[in-house]
Amino acid sequence: METREKIYQWQPVVGQEEIDEVVAAVESSWITEAHRTRHLEELLASWLNVEHVVLTNNGTVAIALALIALGIGHGDEVIIPDMTFVGTGNAVKLAGAKPVVVDVRPQDVTIDPREVERAISKRTKAIIPVHLNGRSAEMRTLKSISKQFLLPIVEDAAQALGSRRQGRMLGTESVVGCFSLATTKIITTGQGGFIATNDSDFKKRLTELKDQGRLHRSWNHHPAPGFNFKFTDLQAAIGIAQFKKLPDRLQRMKAIYSRYRERLEALPAVTFLDFDFESGLSPWFVDIYVHERDELAAFLDNMGVQTRPFYPPLHTQYDFHAADACPQSIRFSRTGLWLPSSVSLTDEQIDYVCEAIEVFYDHQSGEKIRSKEKETQDEPAG
Ligand SMILES: Cc1ncc(COP(=O)(O)O)c(C=O)c1O
Image 1: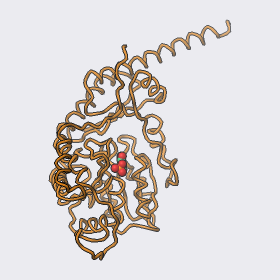
Image 2: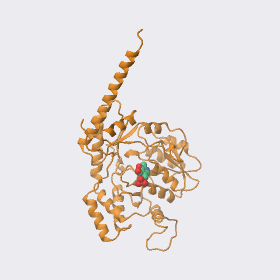
Image 3: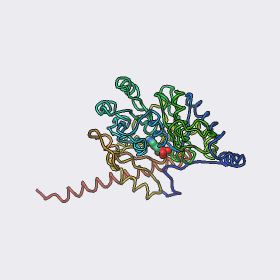
Image 4: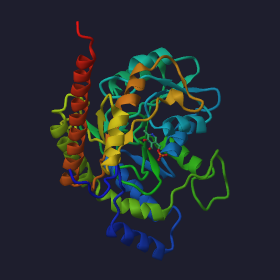
């Protein structure tokens, strides 16, 4: 196999459209949160089929503001999955509450509703399911738990913009859904995040919270609690151009995933989890599960292919505590690997990555045969 230019696990893709929009924003001199931010909020709300979208600095702040707007803070507990980006948990801490982590399901790496139910205490005030990697959390059971225990659900859809389940966009099934527009996401504004909701009162509280406790910028009255978590029109300009590319990118992500899967599924050592494209789900990245994850990642790195291992279990990170043992999360953390997944990836690059993985496993089986032969040779003659 000849080596080529480095293949990145993920690369943001911006073009002339983004440049033109930013130049127009600068020329208008409205560079703080203004008309373009409102326009991007409208575009996102209509795409998600929700009443309101509120843009903010990033996805972590989006989750924190959603919790604060729900009245959650000091002394409260929020149940979150053990396998997620640390931002989910840090958002709970930013709101002043305590994250309680629970295990995930083996079939889709999303929060296990049975574990959620077991972890509910008098202090529990909300549940945050994460639609990890674009797969839907098991919302039906979670919603019935939410109803039974009167606990709001805050959906973390940071990795799931545009992924649908039975026609409905992930992140829109409960009172509030939170999204990220970080550079690793399917569309980006550099940093950025937003909250989607159908509740007008809730939207009002979020608007106050992100702008010093007021509803209008010109006011000097601050009748509610608030901070400064506003967006900028420079970011919105990029977001508007990126938004137009979203449908094509979602299609491309499914095609990339399918191409990897068709070729690699033949390898017994490589496991894929199901992705229900029929129902409308769309992947964030291409995820595979392999026992020799770190060796494979190192081999691919030598071949010019960058990959990304799954997150460590959250309960092993600074000041996070699990309600109970989390064997699934530990297993995923040891075996999960994200392959190169940029929307700009060519079919030829995907084939190169697959070939490199095949070569790795050819070497591995060669090694196994050789060590077996050696064992037999070393056995004392009997
Ligand atoms: C699942 C999940 N939750 C929360 C976040 C936090 O979003 P941000 O990085 O925009 O703060 C991310 C971002 O990567 C994420 O993947």
